[in-house]
Length: 456
Image 1: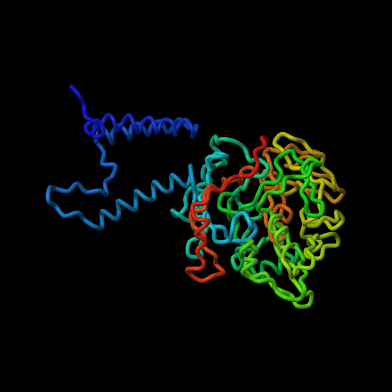
Image 2: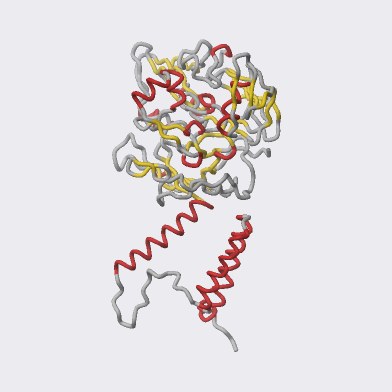
């Protein structure tokens, strides 16, 4: 007897075997074999049918008109379950909120973030309103009454130098309710705790997986030593590759006239670059290496010089650069050497090294850190002069080097903060232009490729 494909498709045992195999693969990946009890549900749903698992669905009699409300309810429930599953384990939508990654990613780019590359991270705060991250109509969209420990499933590889990475903002554990986008810890350094909380508070404490999402390029991985000299990044004393999207600002002097804005737009210079008649020219024009070569060929351009920040800083406060110590004389363009912590590595702790790693010890790895008046260091109540790290850490920088708040301003990114890597731009809108000129059609369905092929 020959069984047709149609009969095979509708056979209940075929459906049970197919979905059971997929389910078992998922459980093995998850690493929690208690979930195998879910096979009982699948068996009943497909074979025995003792329980009505989709109780909201109605079985219509022949000729009966479908209930529109129930049909919508069924579609909504299906969408919530499927999209939530995809968001947790595979891909998640994300919008670029700032210009820190131009000219690689643009403000207004809508992305799909791939979580499979580094392995999806299981929710630590699972009680969340579907399709929200941390805010819903101005209120927190999650509950901390149920929380889970950090766990990441197996991915294809670890973060590499050169990867573009989406991660939770490390300083986002404390949020000011009247200025949620501000870095609370930076404001406290500038204004003090009392003034910061008085004018921008009260504060909200957020769990790790509910911190805001940031996207930057990883320039150094665990175990690396990074230095920046006149804007050029050096890793382990070797000059790092300058990726095509990396740009710095330059002072562009002209013969007295503005550069035609159409010409600037054609080579990709950011919208709104201001002309200063007193130069005459542009004090801060963001340019990639290729843009730099093109701008030099313009007939009315007299000179182009990089804006390099040296100590004492002309653009940043003395305490703006991590680890916020003026005596180091670090700026955004000249800093280091700085060693990136690696899991299992041990460092000597003293008055010089502790400011680099104290937030790791006390916040990211959750120890009780105290420094006595005589300088002695106590971790979890025990005096010590060394510390062994429990996680790997990364150093992130925006491609728009002079317009990016990144690791130079707040330090290391812990491995448990890593979300994924951008995979695809599915929509791009220029918020500085009106419709339909705001549509960047050339960026639709643009695949984002990480530029580094080195293994770590």
